[in-house]
Every structure is written in structure tokens, then in C-alpha cells.
Amino acid sequence: MTTRIIAAIHSAIESSSIVVKPSGRRYRHCALRALPFFILVWSLAPAPVLAQFSQQAKLVGTGAIGGAQQGGSVSLSDDGNTAIVGGQNDNSGAGAAWVFTRSGDVWTQEAKLVGTGAIGLAGQGDSVSLSGDGNTAIFGGVRDNNLAGAAWVFTRSDGVWTQRAKLVGIGAIGNAFQGNSVSLSGDGKTAIVGGPGDNGNLGAAWVYIQPGFAGTPGTASCYDESVSALSQQYGRLDAAAAALEYSGVSALHNAVSAFCEG
Figure 1: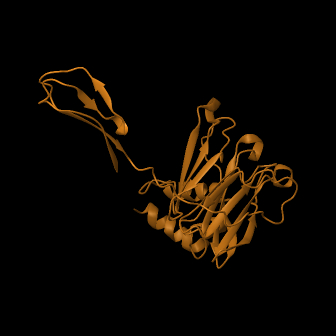
Figure 2: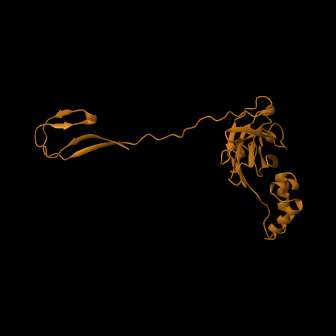
Figure 3: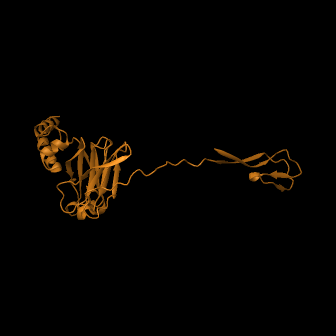
């Protein structure tokens, strides 16, 4: 820290002049008596050291169709070695997301992701998010199904990306614009999807977890409610089993049964 003495006035001065030295300059004033001693100090904090960034790459995904508007949304894994870039206007507004990985200083496109099950020109890639390890991705498409909106979840295994779910929250009121914003927890097992247009722009957000069953344990309807919700959320039970990392539909049924039995 830099310290500068602005002025000093000594209490013992009874007559003569008082010398004030602001920043090294002298001024003379009339005589004063029995003045206290003042030291005015101006402390200058050192200028903050800003983080230095240098451009490493310009990422432009291949396979774009038309003016994709790549870069409308972006996200990085925790280690910075996986990036996802949204392009909501790809293919006349169908949208897409591109995944890139870094090795050393070199970035390489790993995949172009387009979710299945879209209704109309969904604008996929309006928002994007990656899990901490970069192995789970979610991206929103607010224009899906006439602005109802949706989000798509993909996971990566050995460099191959697979769609795990199309998420459409239940209880939406009107054109919710679900997928306007999305985020994943670090472990990729919790997702949140924003819908600012819900209920006349009151807005809402939907939270999803893996695994998650809708029924209430110990009730007669638990099993049917859970299976129905899984079917609605993932489209098919085999897709639900894959997304929730069960070996198959049978294993998923067993997990639901155990959950409902409490």
C-alpha cells in the first residue's frame, strides 16, 4: 500500500508561521497558538491485478445449416476442457448445440447435438449447460411446441453423445417458454429449466433429478404414478432406464417397486 503524508501541524507552535506540505509543496500561513498535532494521511491501495486472458481459439462448429447464430449460449466444464456452444437458429430455427474438447492447446469438435422429439422449429441451443465433468449436457428450445418450450439432456460415454431425455415440465400455464434458461449441478444429476412466460409471464422453473420417481412411497398408486411420470418425461421406459443408468426396463421396474415399498 502507498502512503502519502498530506500535512503536519505541530501543537508546540506559538508564533511564527506554520508550514503545510501537501505533496511536497510549501505554503505559509499566519501565526496560531496551541494547535494540536495533525497528520493527514492518504493511503492509496495498489491497483487490483486483473486476470490476464489471451485468446486461444475461435470455435465455429461444422455441419451448420444456414445462419445458425452459434455462440448464442455457451458453457464450460469445470476443467475448461469441454465446451458447448448453442446455435438456436441452425436449420431455419430448429437449432443445435456443438461440443468441443481441448487437448493441450488444440480444440476439436466432438459432436453436433440435435435433440429428437422436437415439435416444430424448437430453437434448440437457446440456452446450454454442462456438468462439472463435461459428460452431461442440457440445452433448451423455447420455441418447441408453439412456445411451450422444452429442454434436452445428452450424456457422453467414450466420446459418444446420446440423448437421454426431452424435458417438458408439467403444470405449465400457457406459453411457458421452457428452456429459456437451463443449468446443471456439478454432478449432472440435478437440472433446472426456466420458463419466464409461464402463467402470463409470471414465470416458473422446473427441477429434475436423477433418479426421481413421482409416486408417494407406501401408497397403492405409487407404482403406477411413478411409471406414468417416467413415460411422460422420457417418452419411453427404455429411454428412462438408460437416462437413469439402469441396465434395462426390468431393472427400472425393480427400482420403482423398491422405492414405492419404502
